[in-house]
Image 1 (cartoon, rainbow over the protein chains, first blue to last red):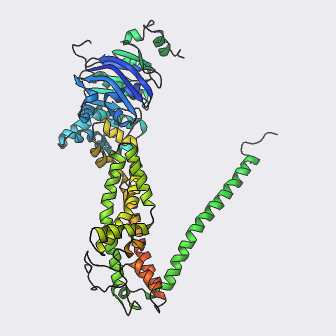
Image 2: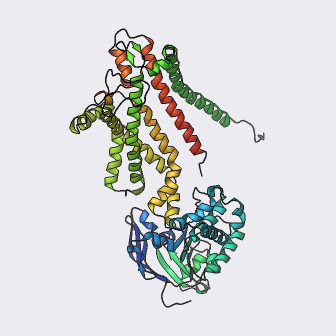
Image 3: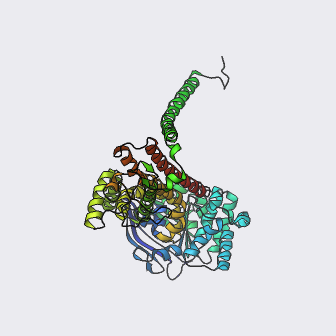
Length: 254
Length: 298
């Protein structure tokens, strides 16, 4: 798994909302084509970490970020081209958001924003992304009905399709399976394993077993600090380096 | 004694009684609001309708307002409303888009928002004095349709900004975040998601200002409206921007207070025309809004 240059490298990342610091100096790196699982209880800073990676943290008016995040050698926190950055870092938020557009337009939205106008190319891309999100079979006959009229689980898969639609090199999944039934979750997990051949994936999840199934390495984040970051087998072994990791995974926390 | 699950207990009975009282009180409030409105309309129709005819609408007043129609006042009001909104609607809407979508939340933005809210509450006579000073005298436009329309535009601007901001804020934040997450710029987000879904609210806010613009007398009294002006009948282009004009609201005021021996139904007929015009515009806005809302997407 170890590659010469890390895809993402984070150094001493600190984030505060007003005077409350929520990330206390995180340092880690992610190799290309790795799946990094991120587990941790609520309020541990998982979502905030992802929002730093694609700079959507900019929209939180009282957020202050310091330290450095480098993706492919480029300084994320100082880049002027956030739109390209966000196309490179796909993001799936935990609550499904169908845009008030047709299913087709939901998926074609990002490519269109990126300047793709060719109809055939858009068609192919929409079909590919919907298939990857395990939604194609359910919606292929009604692509031009509203995306917001889909069920919660379907909208969540639509959100995943949208995140894949701009060909990200890094995919951040924030609790993607929260609204999806177990069978479909498994289908998407299989897709993630395929995507791994050309994508780096950050998988934030409350389902520790999901991290165990998918992740190459797993990070246990607690109160804005990395308690432990190790190969997934080591984290889930009977003797992880930190006792808190064992307690969390086995529900003995607190 | 074992109570059946559907026995009416004293608690349930009390709740039902309260429910009934609330229903009656709230219903009475609605009646108190609707009845006077209906009474006004009925009174105006009863008193003014006999005078209204096509000829009444399309001829100039004659014999010192005592005979003839209201053509020059009707057309004057149309000019004032159209020009005022043509100025204030685009500026107001774009301004609200900036304040709601682009401006950072800092003390300057908060000051501007506060100023907008306060301006919306300024009495129209103050706007009139501002218009007189700024447009008529300082800018040298003179008393004219243009100066009066600009004064009305200034008056409606803060209300349009406030209502547009409200319409924009009603579009859920999560939609914007979803767009930003896939790399859309702010403008792409606004153009493809925010504006299409707030259009009905924006239009409603703008159209409501039609009635306010048509009804105000004070702002135009100093800046461009006159007691009497004869214009060419039969054409919509009888006024030019630098002309002074008559207006329905002002006409109603002068007929009731300045003209002796005016026929009794005349003021009622003028009020009825003004009311009818405003209702027609509002009705149109309701149609537009229901068309847009039938496409409501979430």
